[in-house]
Image (cartoon, rainbow, N blue to C red; front, side, top):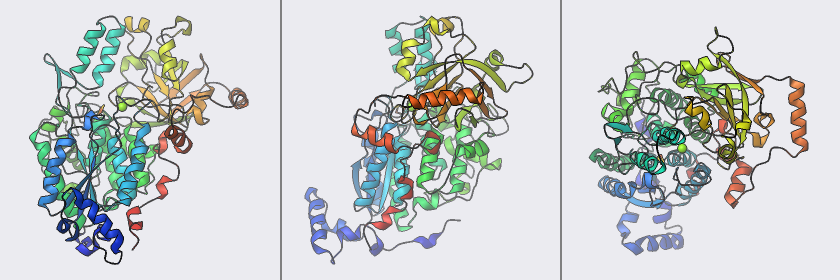
Length: 598
Ligand code: FES
Ligand code: MG
């Protein structure tokens, strides 16, 4: 139950050490005079008002979050109305589509920067403005490490994209149009025109890609106001919830409602289940496992299978379904999903959320308003919508969403017509996405409808940050014959907007000694979904010989570092199944306690 005994008094505010500390007059005066130089009054700084940080993730470089530049005006109104003083500051920009080599490289960089800001400046609480894929996990990871009162405000998804009467979803349209371009159905100008139709307004991706998933996860974890995650960016309700968020963070400071009271084991189990029900991105396990680690909770991909696999798909939203985030919001959004799961006995209802109430209280009466878009638990779109955690003689963990495997696809690969869960094929291996693009149409590779495409060198070390390249398109000649997808396996990631049946995030990766480095073209793989296994069908002695040879050659080669951060991150980064966090970082917990010294 919510515990109201956690209240604090003005003299316990953290910011008092900087702004009202007669024992340290020089430092205090210096701090005060400079913050007054643009018009803040002495009274605001010294009369016991909470100082609230607003971590601004929007900028011209981060268009998905740029709407926050407007929204924070309402956040500040809310903070002032509740008696706080807002201080806005920037988050290191992370834009999924433009950052090269990959936006994932910056999740940990933004995390580190935000930890230092929250630890080192006079802040009593923080509003985390989120949106584009990695901005949400970076912010939540930092809030967990620092452990000052924190609340997430999503900028919201874009409005629906349209092509005539047809919905056009962010990212998902790209995968579709790339196939049509490859097949010669459309030319490049039409390709561009069709893709830009998916982005009709401010906001982040309007599909259930990583952005919508991670903002829904933030709400499912209890870190944003109920119903706020998926309000489309341009709606008036989006600005209203910005105001409410600003008001609420001030009360959270007085209630000393810190992330450690919200981000519990139970909350993470809830998030896993919600991820399955919304058809969430395959990037979610990486980010949720990372947030959990920084919260002091060991969450593994086995937990994703144990809690998430059985949960059915309820959200009829692209890429798994037919609609987009506007319909999802109108049908009741995340609260309607929580309502269905809670009624089915699949959630911990007693967990605390940022509004000081339990998840069960927040979801009372929030049933789906449109059962076509948000399905009832007993009438889902597909059963078993979660991830299987596959293992075998090539890696310790790789994720697969089996619900997206079509019957036709299974038939093509069956090794035994009576066993729908096992399939076999020979592999063609690519070392990174450039190698793939250069060679995929090479007839010498002999790719046919029974080939398994393997991508390696795409993990967080091989391709700094980990590339979203595992969902590989078949060669043009196969697409023209109607074979639109082949099974893919890789040590990289896959875009959350892609619904391809891939085996992803294989850990450890080739670049750090993982078994994918040992694969050769023509090797035969067996995937057994019932056993949760992927096996390379060669004998152990041959595998050992290959390993010795690779070690003698100095191990798997990957491109040189291009920047200091790439080198630092490659030295410290942990595998994808462990959340791609930085080695040693998770042992820093509750660091706001350490600064200022009391
Ligand atoms: Fe930013 Fe999808 S590219 S949210
Ligand atoms: Mg992405």
